[in-house]
Image 1: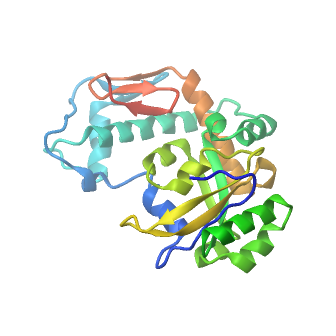
Image 2 (image 1 turned 135 degrees about the vertical axis):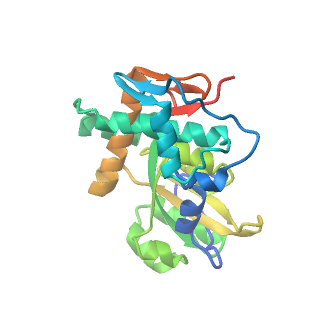
Image 3 (image 1 turned 180 degrees about the horizontal axis):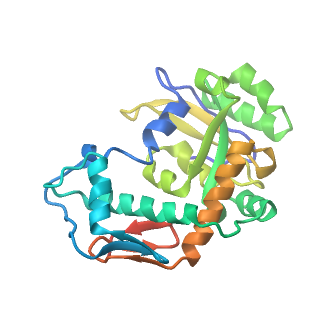
Length: 265
């Protein structure tokens, strides 16, 4: 992975696209029925699974939710799947909280400092034929060239061209699920002061396919939809850090830093 003062090399993916990689690698919710495994912990039908303030998730309600997602009542579930669903319930309680949220100015300052500060990074990209071209494109961007013009002239990924180069907004949790995708990991290093970088692209077998120039989009340049995503993500993290959350230790523990239910130990 290479971080440059400006845009960097990228190549396009034959038979694929950067945005499809994001969708494939960063799926937040998978059908629980697809991840059932034997030999994992089960959950009890008594006591509460979790609590947020005065809101309680009973074991019966939790079992009903899992059943509605296709989980059989008589089979054990993997711990990760159970913890993910508890996390979803906790986050829903935060969303239902009508307390005043973070202001736009604070959200902008937090977001522009980078994903370590905000938990989310919205990026755009240009896919090119080889590393040399990527470096040239990166240098052009660093020199003030118009992103849209370079996208039209250089980009080889039609899915990016159709959406103005926008790859999307990536959260820290999603990035953790795509630890083997270099351009996603590159996004973790970018911010408003260091907005560009480049990383190689690979096919599912690990064969190199090219490079992608990644550009961090500052808060002031986000669409209204992406600005809402960013603000909500930051606001949820603040609420998670300050919330009164309990999780039955049989399932894990609440980690306010990541906003997730994690395994004990």
